[in-house]
Image (cartoon, rainbow, N blue to C red; front, side, top):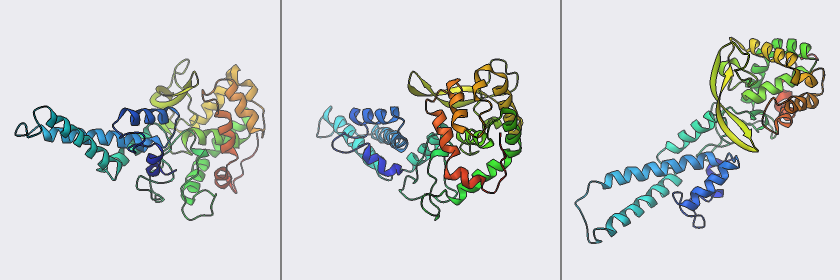
Length: 312
């Protein structure tokens, strides 16, 4: 999704919705953000850049020779409106280069989708920014000249490297739980963006607290409270390595009575994921369907091609 073009869709700065610094423009942007629309990332960054530019212009105007022919009160008002218009116009164009940097930081910090194209409307290079996110396994990777609809080569290599690094531990866990290794890989891929964001070697988003006596790490997370997506900070378990994370994950499911219905589901990834969701593993109401979608995705097929996964 092209975030540069999306600013038009959000009507920031057009005649119908008012300027980006107007209340109408702000209300529309807030509505897009509440709807979890990833298009609002760059638009928000441009709003901030416009506000910053206006402050800079206002600071420059603070040094003056006094009132001009427009009068003592009218002059500052007209100058303020002029500064606002200049700031809006510059920010909605190429800006001063701050908005794309802010947008990338927001996408990375809040695990949101940056989109198929960058702020300049051009497809990113193979090494360009790709924000890790909880549903990264569901998104279409940027094209690198491969057949349309197929995962990009760079993303396949990343996903395969991730799978190979955790496969021995996953196979052991799958045998303990009686489920398909692919189901566990899909969940780990969903939680970490195919290994792009593995803070504290925590592959499954397991939180600390309770009986957990090990190390913890504060991280931002997306939760659904009363039907509303919220960004929160929570303590997550931290491990010495990813194998330890897989082992602890399997032990949690085995020894917590809530998850007993998830055990022994074999190759039925849907039943396994649905049982986890019903037991309260995640607050996202679409969590089970996302795990299944990752398990059945072309990227999963490409990342596991030729590997002996085994069965649960």
